[in-house]
Image (cartoon, rainbow, N blue to C red; front, side, top):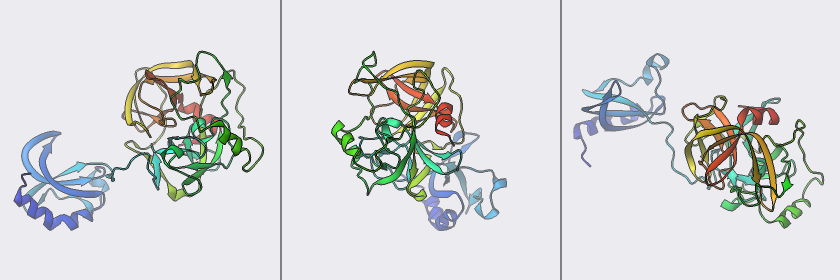
Length: 338
């Protein structure tokens, strides 16, 4: 590694002062860029989370163009964090990490949303991730990480189930019992054991009368606001929604495959989804993208490729495609907002 000694000396001299400036996260040396083009001039690089116009900065936070006759260049590097497995225990927990009802394997924490009535923060994911495919009670423990990743209640409880949209199931059909690759749950005898815990009545949320399902979705109430992070790994904070369009480039951040990209290939899709054990559910008005997920990515938020706007909620797929519910339908039926 060849280091420019002159820049190194200046860097060590100004390091403490530079790191006190708002938004500055580091220093280094590299080539200076002009009008987006790399030059041959070596300079002192000043790393910031996000570049801001000089007019919006306090004078003490402005990076000088030169330091001791060494030119500077400001480089946007985002929020730098120590890499951590998405299946690990995260506190605070961001979108894109392992989560699940205490009786299922694991899915993905999609995003932090707000109750449209109370303004309370809630965790958004799938019914089959947080409500055990309808077989759950309000108040049930939601753990992070999910049970398949070592999470256990009560020590890893991050939230309690608040409400979900019931999935109408049928047996047989072309969906098949095994094609859905996403986490369904642990053995059925554990579901029987769940009936012995808490309320003896099932929680069934209401929704408009319909012939088929519109979403696989649920929300949970965090046990502590400090336990959650309203950003999604590799994506950031969601600042609204956008309607899906054919050909739209999209991305998602999930427990299993991390951050992946894809393209919307079909809209207004009617499709049969297998939930294991021969159970099949027919969904209408869904979004179909190219393959961008694997088991455990259920609950990931589908986001526009270049804007932090939500498009859908991932819940199923195959080796060829991934299926998502339109985000506007999810928000409406669960009475939530971003």
